[in-house]
Length: 348
Image (cartoon, rainbow, N blue to C red; front, side, top):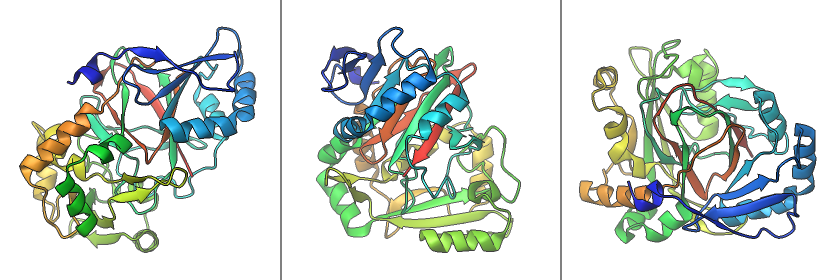
């Protein structure tokens, strides 16, 4: 673990026009997130918190574009319904989580589980739905209940990764794009607690049990579906690997190609269930260049080390909300023990 990721200090900062109701600070290394903490007793209710956020929303949107992620602390949000109220500040992402990779379900309104992947898995930094052509521009996480050990929602600045990525890695992506393959279990075959990344049924992933409707969704989203003899589904996508930020105009890496070298390391090691699943697959879940070429192992390690160096983690508290610019900042999850209730909402 890097010094940056393991020994995180903080330094005060000034966010103009937020008034004296809050204090703000950044991690000591100056990368996101920006923390905005309500002063004691200022916002005793969700109504008071919502009124302040609505009044400051234009400024908060500007700060999100500047910093990439904001953590709101001590704003009286406690329940899933409270978080759903917070999510009403933003336009819901129309695509929902259809064709999403992680096993998760809607809890209430716009609120979903973060993931049902087993707690011993480390989830590497990634941008939400980066494997699809269309994606939510912003996402929010809610610490409904922080586990007693581990389980932090980690983040990393993908603007910085774009600046630091190896030149030949960038040129390969620009030339070929990125090819993504994902596998879904047969109808109704997903697990309640997923033991690997393919442990999700296609009806869960596409929110329908009608294969024809799946075909229509894939056509609309630029996805190639492949139906397998065992009833499972493989989907193939081609993405550019970069995107232009709609506010800043900055060109930022947007892909899961950097995760490919570590997918098996994190999910497959000592995991017979995934080994068995992969033996049945004609196309393995993962990412290559758009022409099908693998990134050379030494280059993949170099890229992985850069991504690792960008990880920022801190001690979450119950009630924390983190708003993330889904292009500028990637997120992930540390393994954990005990009860962890982290919720997510996707915004346009």
